[in-house]
Amino acid sequence: MIEQLYSKSFASDNHAGAHPAVLEAVSSANTGDAPAYGDDRWTATLAEQIHAEFGDQATSLVVLNGTGANMVALSLMLERRYHAIICPETAHIATHETGASERVLGVKLVTVPTPAGKLVPADVTARLGGRGNISEVQPRVVSISEVTELGTCYTPDEIAALAETAHDNGMLLHMDGARIANAAAFLGCSLRALTTDAGVDVVSFGASKNGALVGEAVVVLRPELAEAGAYLRRQTLQLASKMRFVSVQLSALLTDELWRRNAVHANAMARRLADGVADLPGLGIQWPVESNAVFASLPTEAISELQARYLFHTWDAPRGIVRWMTAFDTSPDDVDIFVNDIHQTLKRLAG
Image (cartoon, rainbow, N blue to C red):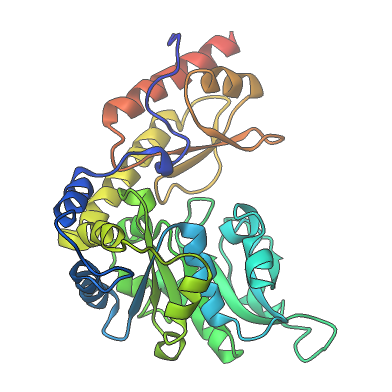
């Protein structure tokens, strides 16, 4: 039995450090003076890489964090204060951004219960009954997360169906891509296949959860939305003065598909963890393991004992559901030690 907290966290990929290649890139950019606010060669290089990944029509806006990326992206898509955003009730913008969409953007979120965190076209059309009624908000944006907050992934066809539904009804499709790298790794496809080719209008390219120190990119795929981006990024407090140090991190991840290699490894470690506990009595895997997240149900006493030694989140306390997350730097030994302790804990509690 481990008597003290094990050093590896399974609470979030945000707990991981930065990839050595990212740190090296930051150090390499720390030479001499460079223009501020993105007028530097590192940000220009990143823009070229974004074009290569998402298409020549893509405009990139480097921002500081995921919530900021969502606020900038959504602000580009909302034209009126009476507009609304349709999203799953588990969406990050609805549950973990302290009401930023309502406070910062001043719009209502129309949330939808979903069995695995994923919207389908019928969920969207079912929320359009009040269109034209001046007493109700008017949906303008459909927002999805890739990967979802339950660790599941939308396929390109599923995204395309949502985009078609949104566009046919005069709406736009936003993708919170905080873990889009993990989805592309799981599905074995390109970033473009999940976004540009599927009809997404604006997406965030997540970096912080995949080996960066700080930073994300808002990628605008509908050219007519791009003009306001620079102004709204500044207005929403997401314009970095020394932007080269943020841009170069994203650039490092996009070089030789480091983003994919990091995500493939993180996903593999989650799969190793899930497989290692799948047949344990008293433990149930809740949703398909399609990324770097494992959701499991455990007896309350087992959760308490394990959390005395490891960092991980209780996702749904009444149902005994926890979330275990892996990262680019999670090792097989980290996983195997954790799996063994789960086995021993459940065995002991079972008597």
